[in-house]
Length: 241
View 1 (cartoon, one colour):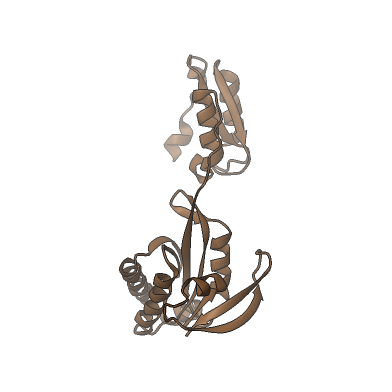
View 2 (cartoon, rainbow, N blue to C red):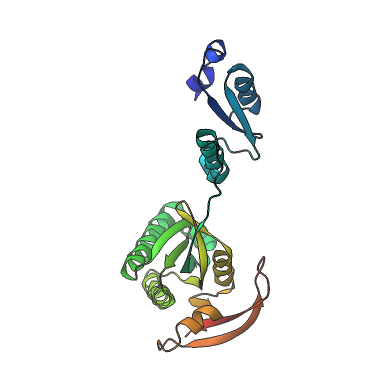
């Protein structure tokens, strides 16, 4: 890092003689925006684009950056159509993880968490789920069918119970957007909110999921209508029996 910050190219910047695209975030926390502005003023054939935000690396917000690069190279800006598919999202997290970690200590908790993570990943593979991301002790996975997501959640509950843990889970089916290796869209938010309503060892689903698995033999208990933060309308929620 020190070597990088000692590099000074001001004496040679003016010698660049090819069309140059310079993209800089206006609030860049690593490299001040004035550096980008200086290069734009110094390099003769440069095109300068200043984007909102504070990220230093451009791939944190790939859409605008790709658009600028595409227009610079081709002269045309092509709107990127998000890759939207119908999928089932499953959210899980460990109940009481903070208290448990404080009681066990970091080393023992880390070992237990690794066993928990291995159990989840083995069930994702078994039920053809795709792990999208994990944060702390929470997981998000996608499935091509809601019945498999429910079966996976129930089996995960049994697996982690043997470790002395309890999880909560939320499941919803809807259109999601692929954003690189991540997913987004209102369906993802709904799944996360449903998971937040679940209690210990409980798998909650939306009415959409319940209707889609009709005839599968999976039984549910009606948990009434709920307002989900940031999501319009009331949502009827069911618990997997």
